[in-house]
Length: 245
Image (cartoon, rainbow, N blue to C red; front, side):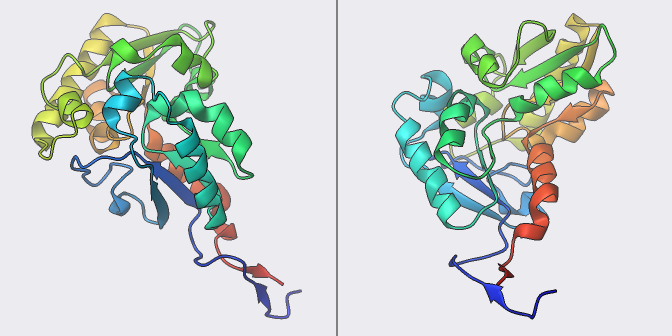
């Protein structure tokens, strides 16, 4: 039984999850991982200087690994219990970042794809909606543990006019309703092209504000980074304060 004494070691307490944020200025509405009001619990943010959306998504995050490792170590020193990122394309850094710290790391919502696939009935495939399908490579899928045995259907929003352009070009204004319409339209197109679709995983961490719209439009389970962060928080929430001495 504790005698009431607790042990310190950190400057702040109460953060279960730390988020490595891209270096962006585009609007982040509630539901986006970069809006602190998305979560009913506190998260700790660390901006990775120079990590633009364009560099990470369109140019393979070239040269950014050391900065992300440094950021992960900084979050670990601040006492977080797990670390995620604000871009699903950073799954290519999953192994290296996880090896650099002593807390769990989940760089992308794509890590849920193998789990979702195992939950579905035989003959059903997992749909992935991504910010840019043209640059989501086999390397990204392999980094998430998605092998050829998992049936997939991948579609991107780069064919639309608003969402992908604003995010990847880091524009200061976003038409939220137009972005919502784009997500619904793309999700419905995914369903029309794949009658065996069983669930959808949203790759992009800026897509959760539209997850309910996709659910209503498709009638399918939809998984995203917010559902993954919430799960990890549940696993860690008792570890957020000073521990008994």
